[in-house]
Length: 434
Picture 1 (cartoon, helix red, strand yellow):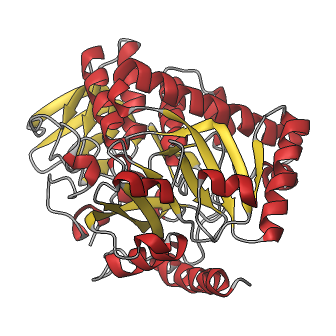
Picture 2 (cartoon, rainbow, N blue to C red):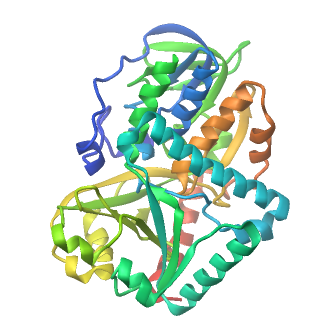
């Protein structure tokens, strides 16, 4: 079964703290009948709505088709962390891609972060972009690696971070597990669902049309223009953008062979009050150096929002909370018995290289996904870059489409079992400190 329906009820946001503290408004009408557009977009998340906004502002006729509700997928469920980087650090990119392409990616990463800030300011100030992400290291070796990387970024790229030794780290985040880390005040965190809902309103104000409960069941390319078919209608368009990331149904085998859906999970405690100082003493977010990353921050009402487990099957585990709570308690023993008010899961897309996948998957059809845990900023930029390509400004899309994103071994049929074996190994390395 598709991730679109395996874990959620149709048209219903997950019971997350984000959904409880947002106003999605009334449901938009499904697509009914035959429509024509300059651009048809599949998916009303960050990527699709960023593209829709940019294209509508250029005066194009844009129709967005969403299987559930705007922001239903990863865009409305994620950890809310915004960085200027990728799943791989800048040294890795230089070593694998060369200095020129790596610097191009660096500049695009900074642009993605700045675009996120500007979209929040213009369309969703209630999403509250707050500066600061702290990268934590579990051991002395990892802390020294963070220190060296910060110095390297300053020398090579002129990018300023602050290294914190163990004592300085614990002044901000008093968890006993961390030996130090790197504070990046250029990155930040936000309320992800409020942002995507604001983008939807912004795109509509610019002239885009969004149809909810309108799953695209088929993309036909046998005519002069692509045609998207839903249960109750069709859209014929000059251009199509596939923007479903991990939730994208099987509309393109080429895409499916390179982007794999995995699940990630978050828990929210009840408001911690004064006990919040046992977690964070500044309004910043934290992510650490485990392969299966622990990531957390405090909400505006002082809840701990904590993510730190993954699964590689389409279905969620029967018990999401026990493993999340165990990870949380290891980092913060004083919260071992803290009351949990919400817990939820969501599906993201990863690639073999952990680099984003942008491609022309068929004539007239562009796709982007596989942001591999760094999707807030990168998806917003990818939507804008695809909008540029549709408008005839293809240089940046063509550059990003050359990133090395190989197909998973065995294609869509075998990617999950093979990746599960690899991830089990890395999880054991995390557990035993190998």
